[in-house]
Image 1 (cartoon, rainbow, N blue to C red):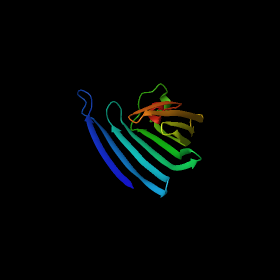
Image 2: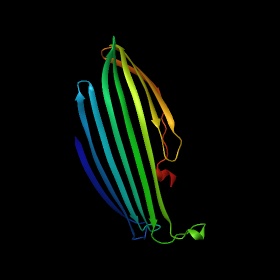
Image 3: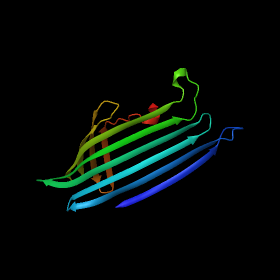
Image 4: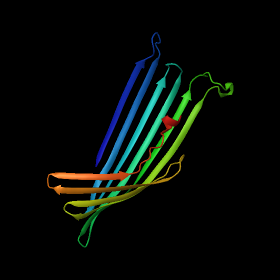
Length: 191
C-alpha cells in the first residue's frame, strides 16, 4: 500500500504597477494497493485526488476551484492453454472533474444581463478495458486489447490495440504496435 499528500502554494504579484495578488494553492493526495491474490493473479488499485484553488486580483477578481479524482482498478491473471502462455488484464478507470469559478465583481461582457458570473461544471469519464498478451514461443508474443470509453459530454468510443513483440536474439527485442486513442477536452479546455 502507498499513500502520499502534496501541498503547494504560490503567490505572484500582478502586472507592472499592479500590486494585487494571484494565489494558487495545489493539493494532491494518492493512495493505492498491489495485492497478489494467488499465484499468477495480481490485483492493483490507484486513487488520486487533485485540487487547485486560484484566487486572483490580477486583471479581474475571481476564485477558481478545480478538483479532479482519478480512480484505477485492474487485475492480471496468468493462464496456460496447451503450448501457449497468456497474461490477461482487465480493469476500470474513472476520471471525475469539477470546475467552479466565482467572479467577485461584475465584469465587462457583451451581454449586460450576465452581471456577476458563476460557472459550475462537472464531467465523468469512466472506461473499461481488457487486454491479453499471448506468448507463441520464447521469441514471439502478440498483444490484443480494447478499451470502452464513455464521457458525460461526448460520445462513447471503442478503442482497439494490437502489438507484436519479436525477440530474435536474447539481447534484441523488437516491438511493433498500433492502437487508437482519444483525448477529450478537459473542463479548462472547454470553459
